[in-house]
Image (cartoon, rainbow, N blue to C red; front, top):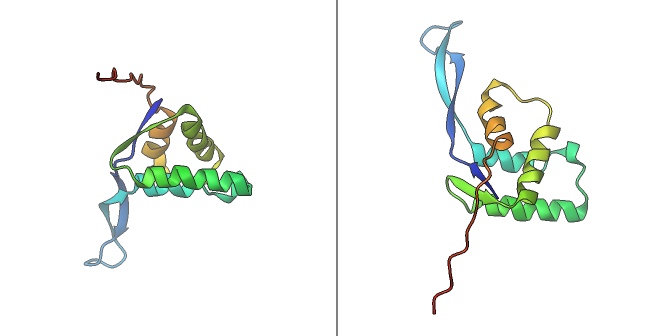
Length: 116
């Protein structure tokens, strides 16, 4: 299984300075990881069939139900990875998102012994 960090992070950027027209100031803007991954699951470049879009939606609902991290089956992680690798147009703010997906650590899952 793969563990994926879904917690948001701050992306750095420059925004207009409302007190000084024509100038910019440094700012930190929240980057919404979970929302970004869910959007990537449905990009047109994936050319999803009807069955595939239904499977993607099941994965999207699983992501929506999680808070800050999720354990994914290899097949689920593979679909997210394929979305990230297929999408064109990332900017510098997405570097952390892409790193988290492509470098999601493999974790061993052990079943608890049955009581009784």
